[in-house]
Length: 98
Image (cartoon, rainbow, N blue to C red; front, side):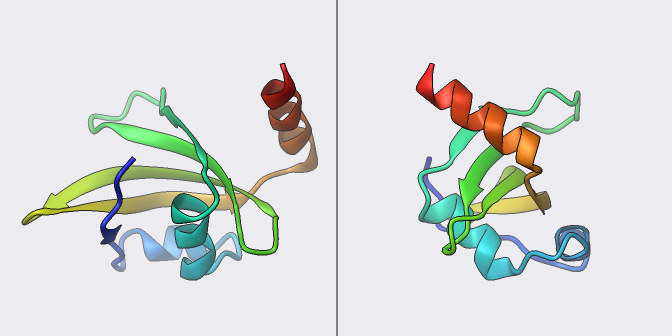
């Protein structure tokens, strides 16, 4: 997965911020933590992806995002992001071991 940068604006940032995450945490989770990325099955008109990554402190983060092509760059546009709940983390960790 290639990400050259991020597409933040007043449309997507407030949706992510309301769950207490910072832009740095979300960007770290997508760029630095080798996230698990799967296609989103929500039925959106655009291709969206779900990612499970971690912030730099190791806390699990769930991010829904889409790609935007701008000039020769591939930008990730986070749509929603939140910290994962304990049961989600446990299920994720079990699936990694299986």
